[in-house]
Image (cartoon, rainbow, N blue to C red; front, side):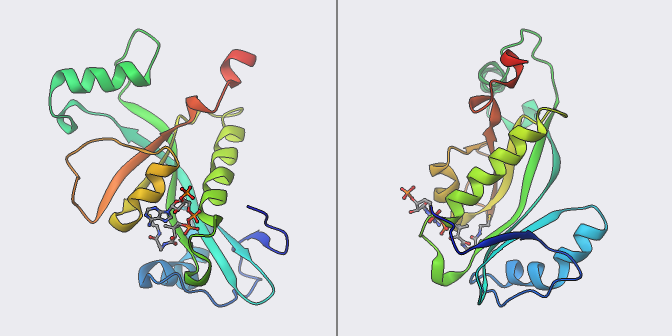
Length: 186
Ligand SMILES: CC(C)(COP(=O)(O)OP(=O)(O)OC[C@H]1O[C@@H](n2cnc3c(N)ncnc32)[C@H](O)[C@@H]1OP(=O)(O)O)[C@@H](O)C(=O)NCCC(=O)NCCS
């Protein structure tokens, strides 16, 4: 998507936010009331995309670690299969996997379904791949709202487990190995 006319900036105390409404009260409130505190406390960095009149979208990201445990799978063989697909290194007993998490993501109601969310995911992937040059990060993760599962599925995100199927949010991940050849080229 062409972002000409939009500015991307990080939330900071010196800058006044422009109006924003993505149709979800919790997300709206996070942006207007909490994002700045999360930044100060080093809990999350929030980016906003805006034009001259309003905030078009925002997202918050932070470092994460995913615990992959047998109990989250239907069977021992399902767990082993998951690890086999994930890790090519033969000793597959890694329990914690480094990640970058999408804590919040919202696109304003008027501009939803015009490619902005997709562009933001691409941007987050680019940040994560850059980070990988200095400090390893295998997944982009998200606790996705039920109504946005299809959006993340389209971007290649997978489910960790079927245990949260039908819940209000589901844990999803995108394997950055699919995008990165950093290890081979370094
Ligand atoms: C979910 C959200 C972030 C998606 O952003 P968006 O800018 O509307 O999405 P895009 O236009 O980039 O859509 C990219 C693709 O996903 C699809 N898509 C978008 N929202 C979808 C949804 N809720 N369910 C299924 N598919 C969806 C689009 O049709 C498009 O498909 P295509 O690649 O085949 O063309 C946005 O709709 C939003 O802010 N919703 C309200 C808040 C919310 O649910 N946030 C998610 C918190 S986890």
